[in-house]
Length: 291
Ligand code: 3HC
Image (cartoon, rainbow, N blue to C red):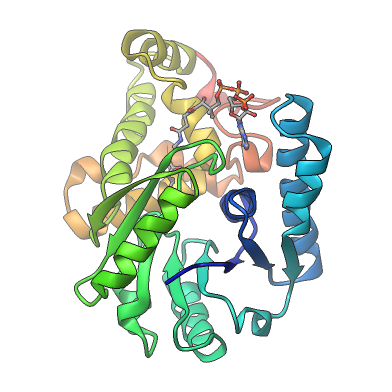
């Protein structure tokens, strides 16, 4: 199946990044948000990200205009009726996703492939909410979506092999590398990455080292582009906390128990870059001060 018109539902950091990736690859994109305010935020993400690329000389102003011109923003899900593929990137709450997929199944033409960008929730559960479970897969991008090369293509026990192979091919057309993964909490990357990030918060709470030293140690000692606390702020502490909760629920392995400090920061609304403050930020939470 040739994907030419794609929908992206949810235009937060990830959704807007995914919309940009599709538009850069020449596809027509319909970006859907719940209300005008959220839509304006999504437009802001797209404009800033492509504007930065122009400033850095990576895009010309004309190319940027073409990319933005390929994206239509709307609050009406009905506008997705003719999409060949819809990627969902709404908050990580299974009930929201299940209800959205029921609606997408009603709105979209029968051939539309429905994909979720979930970080850790069950793709099978959202597939089962539709009348086309064989045409539902996971398409998991990484933050920042325009930069990170990987897409995890998640298949379930009922995914049609042709759909999985079409989505894998599409990832290549987007300039991404696809890996094929099964529907288990966290898939591959988050299953390995998030326990490491969570453990960094535990080490800091135990007083083994402070925030800056832990970040520096992992950057310089392992050659990672970002230390764990910088990366947690990028991913979003709420997302990290939710993923850990799902990993813990599925594995019952106490090494996957979300760090109490993560919970505290999320409860206080310190979510990382998206809220302006997390482990880093203008004003540090006392418990996060470098020790
Ligand atoms: N959107 C678009 N482009 C961005 C961007 C963003 N948010 N952030 C950075 N970039 C671009 C820059 O414009 C620059 O592009 P250029 O090479 O064309 O000039 C390029 O990325 C490099 O950026 P910088 O020079 O500003 O900064 P760095 O060299 O420090 O790179 C980084 C930034 C790419 C984010 C790098 O630090 C990195 O790779 N960090 C690790 C990110 C990571 O691990 N992501 C995965 C998280 S897990 C996840 O997402 C799963 C989820 O389910 C939780």
